[in-house]
Image (cartoon, rainbow, N blue to C red; front, side, top):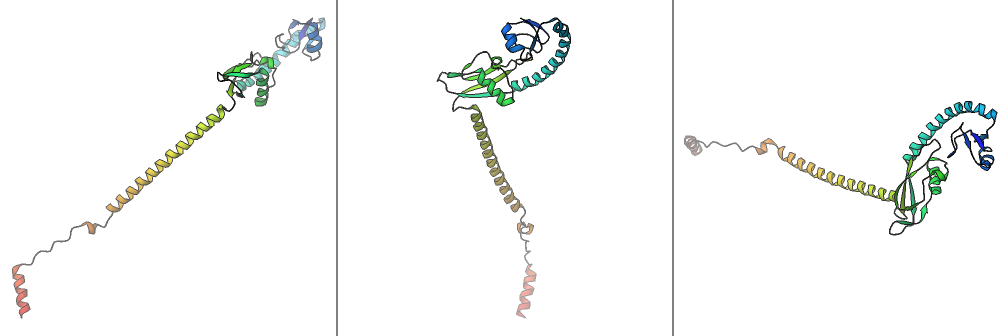
Length: 221
């Protein structure tokens, strides 16, 4: 059945385009959801006007999804799973799980069929494409880790250890500064002792023999 799309439809076409689809798909999905109308002479006449309106809406949509794409590319999703020693998962991280977490993290509701190409079955970092309605396909970073080995906790512990080491070095430096300050104070006290205590005693000139004789005679008298 030939229909005129009223909206962009994934893997079918863009709004205003005439496409040929299965009759059941058109009657049960596209037409009831107002995504398309059956081709008629009147509809064909209106298709050009429809295209013009659609171009405006498409520009708005592209701007909206461009911002969403930036959010997706700046996002990291974490999944803790059970895995063998070789890194193979006992199960998998599915597109449905990734789509659900995208909704929780940034409020993006997207069909699981637009997320990735296959389930993730190994530990490690994966870049998973997210195909948006505007034809954009940003990649979200997905970290799959073994249960009990959450890299976020390990990073936090490493940062805490670095902070504690930094505090210890600061305390050691402070102690050295205090000791140096004490040494400077002792040195300053030694330098600042009274000047008279450091000066040599004045020398007493010995009296002459004549003065000593005169004093002896005076004493006898």
